[in-house]
Image 1: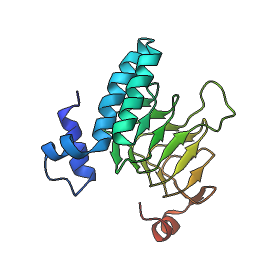
Image 2: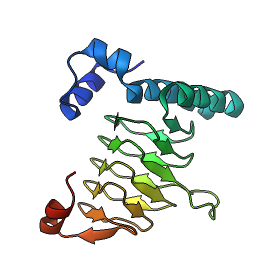
Image 3: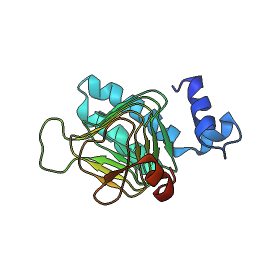
Image 4: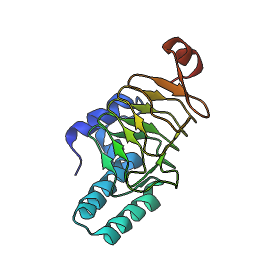
Length: 177
């Protein structure tokens, strides 16, 4: 099941939440993580077909697709999750926040590790696409609708298509993460 501290994570990152019952009943990000925990367990036991089936059932109910092979850290939060896609070899660190429409996907050209690695304490804005076996450094921010195709250094803020690093002053003016 989900740890009690996860409720604190949701309450900390979403000022609209009123209580734990609301989180349990109405937060698709929470439901998607429940499905992922079951699917990931089965995936690690080499039950690939049933693991994928569990993830597809989760996708049907939540609109969030997390491959059962993806590794998700503690304190992960998906806000307004519709359209979120997380690929098989993606690795997500601790205390990461994703908004709706984020893709942690492959480019279709790679084998082996084909999806991004996201460090700790990262915020990824709505609609951002992070593609390929790249690394998003800890404490980085990815602006809404950015398309990230190269590594992002720790603590950097990236915006645009393709994403470019902005100074902190420029990022505050151009991106409200």
